[in-house]
Length: 111
Length: 115
Image (cartoon, rainbow over all chains, first blue to last red; front, side, top):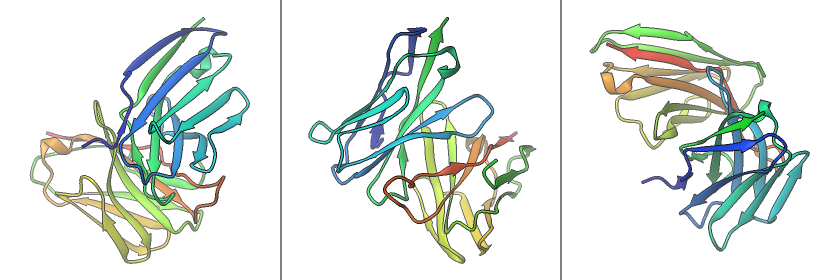
């Protein structure tokens, strides 16, 4: 069973607008959450993280929000840029080491 | 690329043959992982290691074995390759987790095709 779910396989956004990528999880013991970005033929690269002691973490154009009661996190990218076009994976862990990944959302930013 | 390399980058092999993929790191990180990426499944953990000769199974370990005889190398072996093991394999490393530093660094991947 998929413990981390990304229910939107794809998302298209106009350049300059906000991109919102969503992620849901089932295990209430998860305390560490990550977002990764992946370009074709490359390994995933770390984007931003959050732990359960926070409900928001911001890094430049990227903000991750965590709602533990709803078991939901989201990644906001604003403003979106064409170079943000990639597949985004969320991941969750109890310990901060062994992470479970979602199936990914393919973001296309239209110039 | 952050001190982690995978070899080979591409491989085609026949059903029933053994295959070994190598992950090499220069970061002296304690934890190493093997994931596979498949459409509709995202990244799934195969095996991981938390030290030399210390390994454990992940979500999809059947048909795979691993070995870690040195800190820097983590080998993934498909004992008898099957077509269902056609996938892209990623190695990842991580050190001791910190509040802002936890998470993996991934290698560039190995594309394996079993025919």
